[in-house]
Length: 214
Image (tube, rainbow, N blue to C red; front, side, top):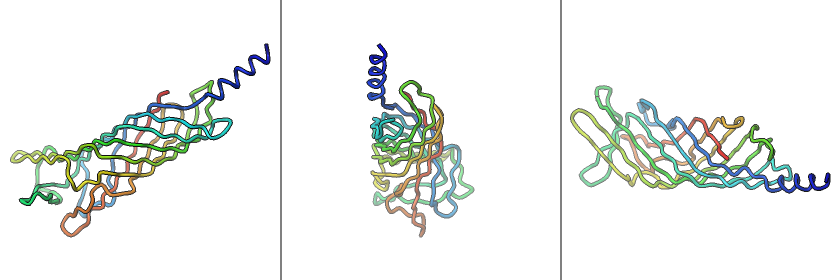
């Protein structure tokens, strides 16, 4: 009987994985901004998806993971966009005297995250410490810029100036359900856009929480 229990324990442990659905909620902070650029209100980020866990060692404390998900990003700023007569987009920083109720860029992306994982979990307990470092590639599905004031409204959909592919480094660390999440974009949000003579080398730093659900 003792041999039977030991065999069953090893069998269950050999199948143990941390396959997980994930959800993250972040504040999106833009880096490398042009002169006088600022963010206002709250710039939210939300992502959901699934990660497949692939353990690397016998104790299954180290693993690789790859997944697929969807991400929404919103950026409330003082960067104004308008369409020129030739169809190109012009960018300028809103003067302090400009009054508007909305000035927002919204992105919808398909994301593919990769993670190198360390955790001290076991198949018996899902309450554990984790540190997951990784890399994420995102593909832009849809974008919308919306400006609204008392006198005008501007809508620009699927701007060709935005990079279709974005990528960056990720770090998730925490205990059990609660985890601090950081993403830093390694390439620019816009391709070659300019504000006056300043190149617009905007990159994203996302700070927030990530939740894993088995």
